[in-house]
Length: 547
Image (cartoon, rainbow, N blue to C red; front, side, top):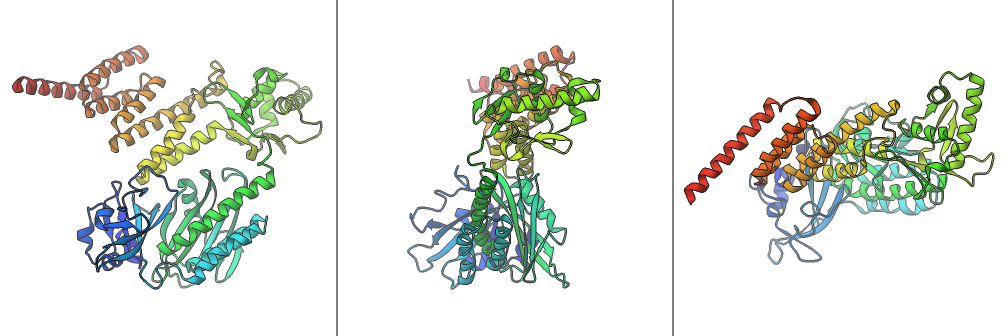
């Protein structure tokens, strides 16, 4: 991390998971008139004693880093240090949650508000402010993307930049990309290594900061920042800018990019709704974690609405394909086996028709469905109007893992808990004896167990022992013979001072393993039991001594 700080001219500090300063660059030392050694180990509000310029309260009050308030990925406040003294100084504190190679931290950029140009020149501010009226005057996503990447490069003082916009849903329907370099905008993302930043930002829903080499022939070392375009926690695209290390200021770039990203995200959300009719069109919601449930505009569609049972079965199969759909041959094989091709194809047309009518009873003959489309030889859902709980569950699981790896524990817990809440039970629970869904049911159950265990461990790391205990118990409700969850629960009980509960949990573990698998607890579990017994014995002796 020291390498990145050394490349930044503006004052910046790095906070660890407990909001303690772990690094500060030379510009920070000059601004605060103190050394990095004196800052390291302190919480940021102790390292920079300041009050809110508007309320006069200590900066820790209302700060999203220390409180329960959530901020998307950047948060800026105006503060005052040395209030009422000759050393009084106005500063701006910009928090940035981002991914930096080998770094699990939050960056804090400090802007000197008493300087002539604290952050952003009038021309840069003008470039940012000019975007909104321009976006209001167009419906063309292509034009909007070109407009924003031009403004982003101008407003940040970057030497080049690129933009990637999702066309469709969940980043899978299509991508629109442009690169701005040498004053020109060209289609695509180049050099190709820029794609990595966009992909990482898409995966994490967080900015990615890294070093690159310039797109010109000089191969200048540059700082690059790539930020997400988000609306309702849905990824709509990414914007990346970069500039030579001796010229490009990341803090100033973030201040310019945040309003640009917010404006473009709002435009893309509106544009998608306008082009697809999502603001008024119906939505199909399919729940397959637990009992299979179908809703159109939040109204349940009863299973008896399907005049043909195979229409309902086709819907179940489509819901298990990760939106890729099924080919006609796959459907015929699933539903009719070895039936003659002519009759099977006729049956398929009838079943697809009955499926559409069950979901949309008012659908006129010959009119396209809002939910089902036939793309060549494949039958699949229309992405923009269909929500599937399994897709959302898996997407949030992956984001939780990535955030946990980066050390963003609170965010990982938040996103992971959302995924846990989506798991209403085994996949296609009411198809208990159907072979076709057993494999996916087992895989999703394993993902759920791993996820719950991870959230439990994150709660332990943050000192939330009772919540950790609840998570481990949730895992054991699904899989009573999940031995590692038993051990985690025992350890959590001990840490919470519930020694008797830990001993009882060992007995539950032993019984569950024997009932389900016919085996005894592992060596690791036995070692944990013995350590707990020793601890209990020590406590008993201490009690007797005191008495």
